[in-house]
Image (cartoon, rainbow, N blue to C red; front, top):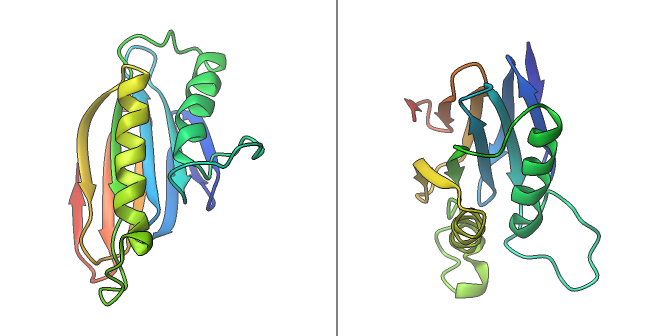
Length: 155
């Protein structure tokens, strides 16, 4: 079974393939608990929420926490969870001001949040100028990345 994860959303599943499309500066965060084979995938758009912002998976600082809570409800004990991330591209190369480097800022915020929760980042495919679509296999924790230029890689 394949479950589509929309922009700013997350899904948690056991035995399914979680897929998100259209990652440019956005980042896909996959969390995986190998002891119970439960995984989650979020499509993060922005690094930080503003004060008073409703809790949403579109922000890096909310997505990790929300997925961990959902994984716990799905049977994860929280120990040994690992992460993979992909995305964070700079699609428009001519926008060089720091304010436009959303992809880099998303990646930094996600890494900071993973570290805060004690989650080990085991693999990443970030940066560059290519858009990505990712499929995350919750039965074994593999992640397939398809690039807009037609290439593919596994992490």
